[in-house]
Length: 157
Image (cartoon, rainbow, N blue to C red; front, side, top):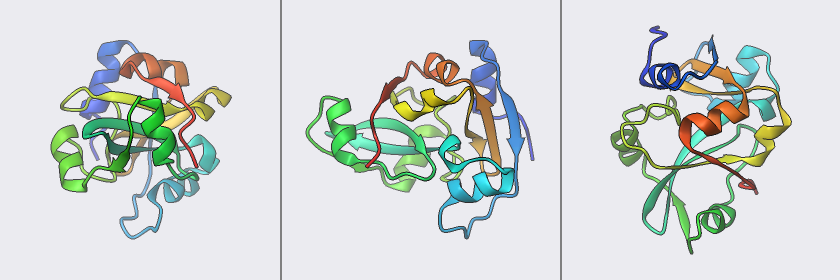
């Protein structure tokens, strides 16, 4: 497994401090984020999943705890929109340049609005996908916001 991805390159360019955590990715896991947390012995609420959605037809990157569900109503409100829906996997892959299961908010092919669930602020560091299946990276929530121009929002159901 390569440890250099578009995500790690983007974080390096931004001067962000991060640590890599490779793990054995299970494509058959019912919830990949929870499987990653278990594989690394981390609390599920500290391991965040990256989702691609659309608010009023505009793409948005959403980062929420792996043990929570995204609230479409809260996402739409946070983005000043009326409705939100998940992006189709093929569209998410084309837009980000990453494969589903390996989508990172860092180093995406096209810059889009990024929202991070406010619970990330409860931790000194959070784990977020590093740009490929089986690779997470740990960094301070403030670094994640700085590297993506994200906003902290209440996003979970």
